[in-house]
Image (cartoon, rainbow, N blue to C red; front, side):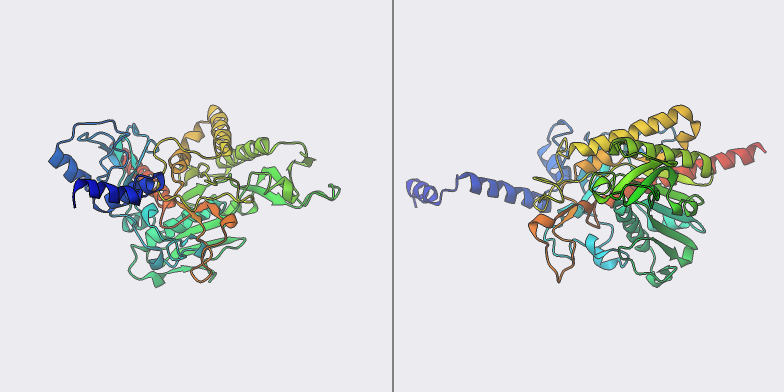
Length: 443
């Protein structure tokens, strides 16, 4: 076949149409994910140094500057590394567990078992720009947690993170029958709390459902008839007395601070005996955060309890909201650079930062609160949500208009939140032990 015949045959196939071009590019990317070893390529081709943004999809996890040595986060006692400033890198050793091997997961988070066909979302690891995080080690963390309590309190995204930690820790326990819910309750969605005990270590990992963190209760007897409940912005959730003595406390709120979960459902705001029928949701949210920070200041012994507050986790509905047909099921890769999340994400984030800043100006104790600042890093992970795959394998994917672009698949993004939690927890333990050793030496 001569070149003219070949050209005419190819032309008849119309391979240069846009749709086929896109398909070809997609296939090339998939091929690269499976077969490209970036270290081999750079070694053999002797590529020059290039801008770190070009190398964002790096397969060796070495970070943004080739050949540059990063410090070890645990050895950086001057805290010069911002672990939340970084990129997502492909790591072939991930995930650290499989959902089928973890019995501590809600069905709604088991995306691969529920029929999600791709797995790329499980392969990304968070890499800080200027330091390296320790690899999560469940055995080490359990040893550090021996005879201690871990408590998560917040909404269902907090539960997402809590179940991730249960899977990460349980993967280090050979006999998982030694891990059980102390009241015999199954790990399903419910209103209340769950306490899982790791018997070999005499430690518990607990979850308290408190989506607002402040108290939601009945309104005053003389309240308007459309008022079903009130959020008492100056009072903590009734279960908070069970959180305060934890050794490690992880708090979060934000996803229920919207019109749908408050005003639309007849839930209004209250301070003392005063109903705040005209208070905006944003102002109510900030007032509630102020109450939480004040509670930490007054009720929590931060010498004993390491307090973490996780920032708002973004949603990624495209073309609508969860009520109006928003979708995310076609997302299979992270966002390369800036994220495209609803502006409400940054409004909530900024309200939190403002409330924290106000508290910091009033109290030195604010320095004892560790902030899991995951908003920006998670905003790039439009690929990580349950989308169509949250009802179970037999039920199959849900209709397109019923997608979940709020909660996260497990294994997945919340595992990286816990990677950072693990690193910050270890560092606190190292500093504490160092201070004790220094004091003992002086004595």
